[in-house]
Image 1: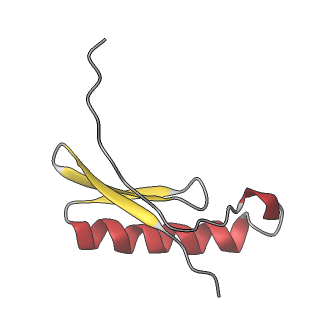
Image 2: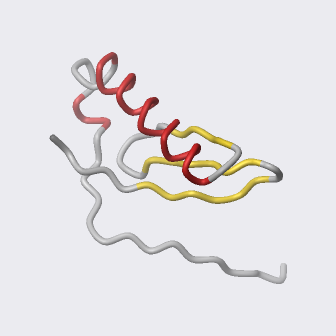
Length: 72
């Protein structure tokens, strides 16, 4: 069993959920739906792809989500 970190953000009318350990994401109409869909996508990814590419999994320690504005 592995622990995964993810983030969720709103994009228009949907919430996007993105795993930080591997390049897998999903979406839903609610935060809960987006996270549930991410769990389903991760299960499929791990079942199909991880054994062939174990180096694609990145261990993530503490995570920080931030936002900034740059005037350029």
